[in-house]
Image (tube, rainbow, N blue to C red; front, side, top):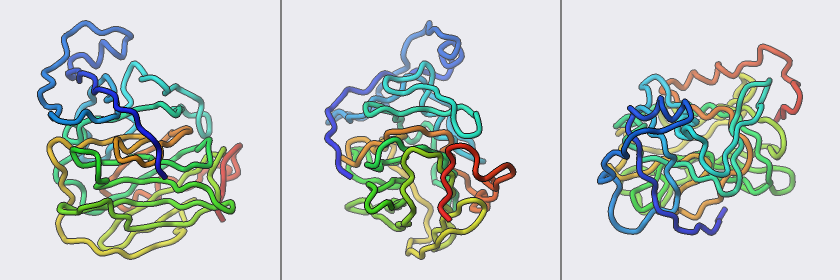
Amino acid sequence: MRASVSPTPWLSIWGPSQRSSAAAGGYSGEPINTSQIPEGPKPPAVFSAVRPERGSTSHLDLTELIGVPLPPSVSFITGYEGFPAYSFGPDANIGRLTKTFVPDPFFRDFAVIVTIKPTTTRGGVLFAITDAFQKIVYLGLALTPVEDQTQRIILYYSEQGSSRSQQVASFKVPDMSNKWNRFTLTVQDDEVRLYTDCEEYHRMEFQRSPNRLRFEASSGIFVGNAGGTGLERFVGSIQQLVLKPDPRAAEEQCEEDDPYASGYGKWG
């Protein structure tokens, strides 16, 4: 899951007061002080131009990091069941300083709710929180390349002091390419579970300390890529990518309508 990454300077981050004017199609203000951006090697991912408010303690909608106007290689499309979604091209660069969006410390137990449509068989990173130098993925979700019509959903969970990214769970699923896929991954106590269509698909145990995850002040959170880690970028569409501090959130994806809706892939 390696991909070459060419260095690109970070953009200035706008203050919250500019968000409404940006959404209306214009911007009339000065960039806020960018001293919060760390010195040293320039991270390769471009941080989107609108700074969202710090994420809610009830949930974190990672698509809010995309911002308005849309950055290069990202566009709006019609998604699953006609709802809006974002299309990510191979050059999409979405990222932000973690502290601007993610609570500190992070949720002890949580759920990741996902609705995606990959358009390649290469897999890729759905989201990642990295260290300041973008070498280690502290928390992230990724897809492996397709092999023999299957691929894996990988959960990264690396506690403070880790010298490398830790893959704590790996779930084998059918090829997800070119169709809509809805699933929820939950972390509770020392167990990771994967749900689809309101049903548990698989579970795995893992070991972690009783401490909640904490992130460096200069760490970054990325959508559709993992910054400078070299992990494969996601190419395709993302409709839903939400973190919730309640593992029971898997119930939110229960099918109320026809589960065989157009273009929807079932794993069973």
